[in-house]
Structure formats: C-alpha cells, structure tokens
Amino acid sequence: MTTTTTYSQDRLAAQPIGYWSRETAKLSIGAIRAALGEEQLTQPHWWILNHVAAGPGTWTRTALTAKLAPYDDQDTDFDAVHDDHADRGWTTETDGTLTLTPAGEAARARSRARIAKIHARVRAGIDPAEYAATIDVLRRMVANLGGSGDLP
Image (cartoon, rainbow, N blue to C red):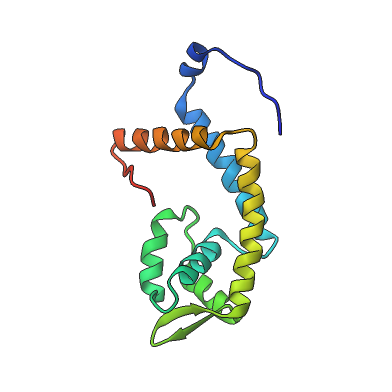
C-alpha cells in the first residue's frame, strides 16, 4: 500500500471531483484491462463470460450486446467477441441462447482471480464502509448531473 499525505477536510473538499474521479477510473480500468490482456481478453469478453455464467441459457447474443454496449467505451465489435468465445470453445448456443462450457468457466475463473487482485489493490487500506460511502456519494453525484444513480 502506498502512503499518502494527510490533508484537512477543508482542503480535500476544495478538490475537483472531475480530476479525482477521472484519475481513479483511468487507473483502475487500465489495471483491469492489463490483467485481462494477460488472457488475451477485453472487458467485453469478461462481461459476457460473467453474464452468461449468471444466466446460462437465458441470454441471446443480441440481448446481451444490447445490455453491455452502453458500458463500452472502445467501440467494441460485440459480434466478434461472441465469435471469439465460440471459437475458443468457451460458449455454446442452443436455440439461440448462450451457455458457458467448462473451458469457458475455467477462463472466467482465471480472469476473476486476476481482477480480484486489482480490486484488492484499489481497496487496500480503505475500510469497507468508506468504500461503500464513496460509491454512494459518486452515484448521487451522477444522479445530480442527470445520469442514472442506480447500480448497474
């Protein structure tokens, strides 16, 4: 864990939220993407694996792409990601719905372990209540600016 300088509440309250939220997003997303890259995966690969694992036989390619595309910031070709999963033998389609294969579940588990290490780094030295309060404040800020404050 890196130590940081302690500042007064007044000094912290004067800081720009845009800078700190952007910097947090840039660094945390970058670390996640680098960890997934070790498996030759993108975030959309990861998202699809997780959604299919949570609802085997319930997602079609089209429905899952519609659900995930709003979170994508890299103009991903979701059809190519679905094809890649199938080519790797990680998903199968029955009557148009997706299911993970044992190899797909193994890939998801490996990726999950990599991402868990990133989450642990992000949260090092941060009490779970502080983390929850931070998320709650950020989602209320999003709602104040006209976005959805609902959890994804």
